[in-house]
Length: 327
Image: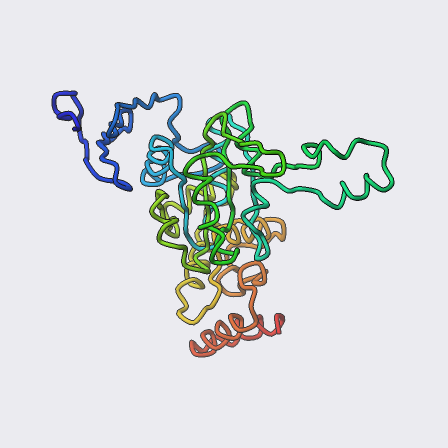
């Protein structure tokens, strides 16, 4: 039974249910009440972003709720919107080690737990002098295993989980729920000493199983609006000329708003493009007219063709000639 928030002196609170857990959250997130006990989040452990990462209130709230409820935080969004950098920012701001598990199409869940090096053991049995009966020395923990045995709480990033096969997320359900796994070769159970803060990113290339989604807190990082984008750019290019920034931003959002562009330029590509404009000594007046270093923003021939057709439709021969350099 949740207490009356008014009796606790909470202001601007909201009450909701997350994954079957009743929660009361006040606007500052200093207080979180969960069924079964009261948890207080002190200001010193709350995540509010870092010096190199601009975070919205909604995103910081999602991070703090995931930490309080001890659930993985699943982050989706366009490529280049800062999903991976979020985990780096959390680790930096909370002074924790960051362990990164990069997922590939061939990655298996078992690899994140441990690997038994049977080849090395066989080699040692034939040519080595060491005692091969000690199987434990041939067991190497994976990234999830490393996070479990860490003496201090760490941030674990499972990056681009949607690249793996469809069964991959389901194969991790028990381990992420129970924070433990069994190694049959050594008859040993590895249990997390400190529950890691788990951040999982996805580019939405594949749908994730419902059973997996139920165990996560979800947040979608929307593409930044111009005002937010300026704040992000200010972190990376604090001395940027105002006129150059305005012309580059206008051109960038113009490209993103072209309907038939397949791979729209991302935040990270805009940051790279701005650096290219500065290094190349491009004057602000040339940015919209010539779109210099276009290959930093558009990476597909089809998108270059779409832009060329768009410019020709507007009757801009000068821009068409510029585009010719990328054919």
